[in-house]
Image 1 (cartoon, rainbow, N blue to C red):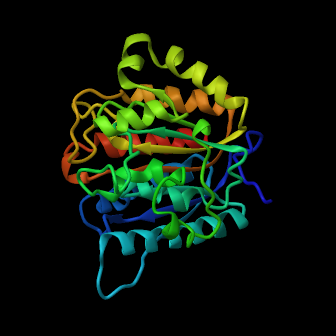
Image 2: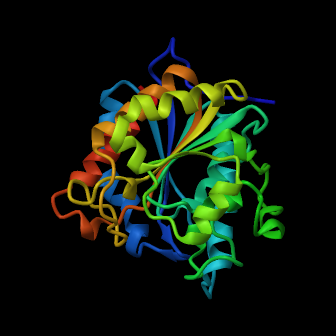
Amino acid sequence: MFMLAIDWRNPHLHISLIQVPYDSGHRNLRMGTGPEKIIRSGLKTELVNAGHEVHLKSIQVESQFHTENWTSFSVIRELANQVCESRTSNEFPLVLAGNCNTCIGTISGVDTEKTGVIWLDAHGDINTPETTQSGFLDGMGLSMLTGKCWKRMLEQVDGFKPIDEAHILLAGARDLDEHEKEMLRDSRIKLAHYDQIRKVGVEQTITPLLTLMRKAVDSVYFHIDLDVLDPTVAPANHLLEPGGLDIDDVLLIIRAVKERFRIVSAAITAYAPKFDEKGVTAHAASLFAKELVS
């Protein structure tokens, strides 16, 4: 199977920078406005100045009547096709998306038996239609990724195969409802809780978990939900949960992962520019993107 990853001997990459400007099935609303804002803040220019060749792309699905679930899965399917085309063209897929459930499209086509997931998020994203209290599809990303829900819909996504829970690291979570806490306790997902990171630091919390993952997988999909950041420093969206990681914490995690794994695809998600009046979060997104491909 074709397997693309960053070639550390060649720091100049062909990057497919894919915008997914959707939030809950709506285009260019709320977090759906984030991808364009990050681009306008200079990300493409910065990547080009770093020596990369960048191909800017955008996802759009046509429908006369938009519903959250149908449109969201249509977006996921189209993204999966775009990622597949990018990988076939030897381009690194770097996705900017409104919702975290786009992870399905971003990871499709990857050899999931040897690929793990690094997931940075303030939330667990492990609800299902049976456990959710909000009905928010975007709170089900990890459950979808592990094949726990929406199975018939996921069967329609070309190249998708569920990820083994033991191959997933969730880092920075600090807002978990009781169902999510129970599901995480019963799962094999590795959890680097925000409180633990704050208590002993990034290195001591993350390193043992990455070491365990490295025994099973040698490459990863890297997912950053920007609300993992402290909203008093870098507000990402309407879910302004107290606490959160510093920008430097996230950069340290990216570097620790790069020391141990190949990164085969990556996504930066959940950014609503209206909450980021000073542009700090958009700048942080650019820093993370550049670090992921450096």
